[in-house]
Image 1 (cartoon, rainbow, N blue to C red):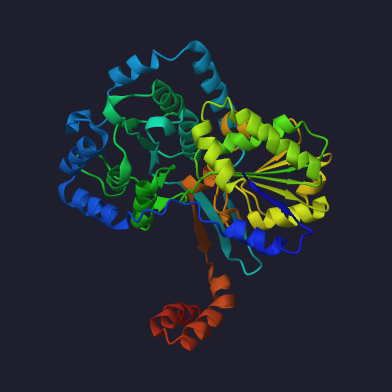
Image 2 (cartoon, rainbow, N blue to C red; image 1 turned 180 degrees about the vertical axis):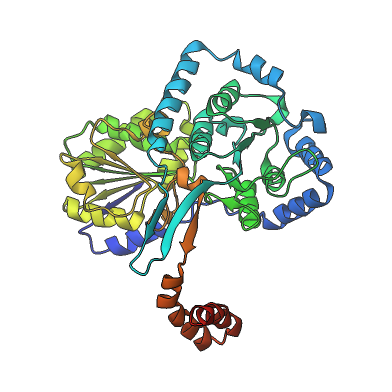
Length: 433
């Protein structure tokens, strides 16, 4: 049974705090293992990747077969049904159109001293996208990671997508093709992250690694950060639905289950102003779980981490939402835009009864790679900016240096950085001759 909380109850604060602090991330200590894998890869390159792939994925590879060949990709892509292809192409078109609007503008101006200032944006040179294998192999994630990188102007895009036992998901390869990915390697785990970060004889290193994975992948991303950039350390999925009584309980139940079916550690929370409606939604969840294909996953998620919270009003709902800082937030209320104005922290917001979160996972347009575990308080979902960097620009004229240089010299002296001050003073002295 999920937790039922009532905001007006004396014990609510303690219960809500316990809900927020419940640890859902995988607790397995894998860091030592991952450190050893990274060290092995750095020492032995391709040989380490090939051995580890045989060990963990039961797949024998050679340096020549680490990546899919163009012929293999063409053969697999040909297996994709026309309807699936059309759906992926629609999703790609909408994702690209949304992310095109995120491209930042360069700027340059002259201030009142005559100094020319500004900034210039440019893409990283190469990006590596991790795509989980097996049951968690999602072509939609390929689009969500690769298209922003392509829009940013990244020159080289590669994917690491494990194929345990040699089983290939043709939709993943089609998504890579649609998104303009150059190379798809059939390797995974910490060794794939390390290979993208440090390179091997066959795999060239990249500058940024994005994409979700298991505990080993997450630990590897932590360890290689600094050598390369990473997007985030993703935890189990989560959804918060704020709903009034003017909703179909079954719709809300399905929205909650849409995240619960991802992972037994996922979390689905309903905040409502109507206790009877909350009970009706819980009953609808139970009924749907009787027939849901992934009930063995969704059931434990709802039982162990689900919650129904009854509040006095939507102002209180907004305040609690900000404390949760959910990955996905649905506002199923009469005036969702008014409620949105009261909310500061969420990875993605879905407004109104006709906007299920699942639309955002596939064809809405915004990115579905989002901050989890309350990190929406300080971070954002994946975007074009994750694949770009900003370079600042400054150009002094003699007049500008004469106006502001003495202050720079003074500050350098106060910090006991003599050469800093002298580099300015030498130019000022030339101007004063």
